[in-house]
Image (tube, rainbow, N blue to C red; front, side):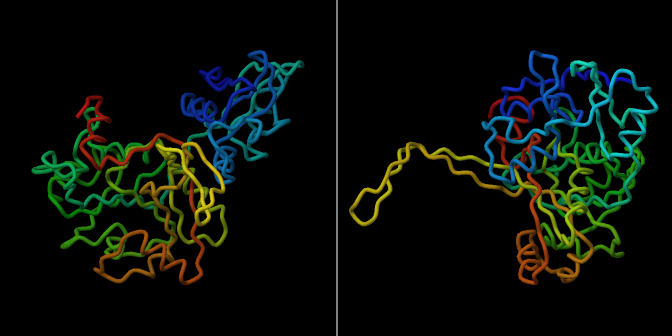
Length: 348
């Protein structure tokens, strides 16, 4: 069966990486079909192509020819549907373009159309114990994770997104006004998921709450701040972590660019050595979403305050592998009144 809305995946060969990211997000099909003359297939771009490009330091303004895959695997219009499905499964790919004898795109097949994603037993731990002081007075009588984004509590938005990626086992760490969160979500039945709680008697930080887990998980755990609104695919994040051998902890990062408001003069002593007109500084910022292998939890002490950067530093000091997962999806840390108002479509 030809995937609906496949035409949203078409992108002109002269586009840039920013265009590819926009196309990927708009279609939701995890593939971009690079074409010339609006129809002839030249290459494909996958989610992985974009992340590898980001890790190589490419800018979103760079041409897509720096990241796309030439001569991709394709299916001809003469093939039967069963053959196409078998081909995708044997090659381990999610999507395959359907083309005619002139390489003109006729459609797109996606494995998700035929196979229901298996449920994932990994725990998703959401940290929802903070007081949200920067969002006062909204958080005076309401815990920040219960504040609504377009009518839905942000904590519920996170759960629904992870659920759509196949996750059903959730643990919520609570402290400030935690009873309100328990009253709202209960055991998760109304959302068709399982929810249990870690009750902090005092704030334990963004990693310390993990020390309260009674049973050590044998699978990697996804951890998220309770105020992160993003289109991140938690399943892809977990796969990325698992495919990098000996990785103990992965941190999702978002690219942040800062344009210096002035021209910069480079000097050596009193000598001028060069000029830069409003240079751009690029950095990776912590996106507040992580994957931790079971070994990482051995570096936490029961009921001891510990934030995530400290835990990652401990792992690095012990020569254990930690990596970044660059995200290109929409992302916002709803920590300030300005952010909260922006998410809800009105100005401060």
